[in-house]
Length: 338
Image 1 (cartoon, helix red, strand yellow):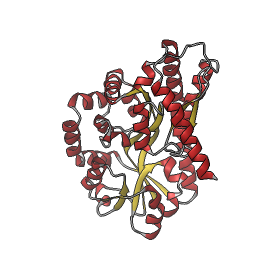
Image 2 (cartoon, one colour):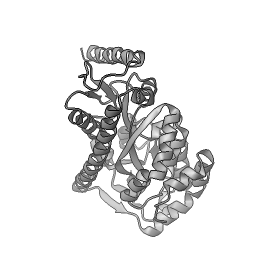
Image 3 (tube, one colour):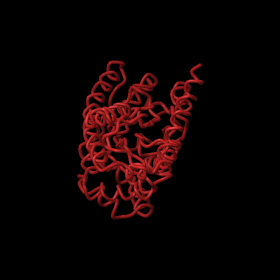
Image 4 (tube, one colour):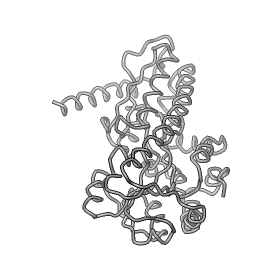
């Protein structure tokens, strides 16, 4: 029965998509939408990604007095990250909220977000993506790929969990750590002397439990929601990468909207971004408390160790500069305190 319902949802969205892509006539600002525009995510419902998406949908409805409607489909209901990007570009699923990591395949310049240990605080990271000089460059990157960028929220930093106490850079040596299958991520952990092991996320808990892997890295929210801390003695605040969440819309779809509706969407996106960031900060504090209460210890790295990590990763900076562009890297790191 559940499978049948999912099929109906996907079919309905595809029908709407055909209408969106096939009809070039602009919708009047005074019309009330007959169907809600779909917004897809690959994240579960109890996440900052969902909070970001729902706040955006609510704001669009509020600012348009209910005339504009967006329905959020979480948990890969409309497809995984790759499928969502493809459908968004085609305009079948106009809106997508997702982490930036899967976008590298479609938008190579988003590799700039893989620069490791660039920021000491999440506030610095937020200033970096909000910096007009950098943001405008990224708008062009997304537009070239067929998307309109509406903003970046985040889930704080990615951190490491392990059963080994980490005090110095030498303590990373030999750690078999699960990572995403991203070449820059793999090279970062190798540079620290660890043994990075790509693995499907659904296998991580069992992998830790059975000792197939020693460690993993994710935002606090994921570590708690998936109960990974149950299998680990320590969470190490490596803070090696901000876990950015992007809100994008099909560029063709956006340009076909009346100007006042475009303004509503951009205004709603800004409000949703700030709201999601506030909620992220609140939730991280709550997740840290959950981890501490379980007996798992939180380790904060010294400034000396963080400097050593940054130095060990220097070759990755050069590689990303070559693969992306020095101008984009410089704009991103402009306010980094190093």
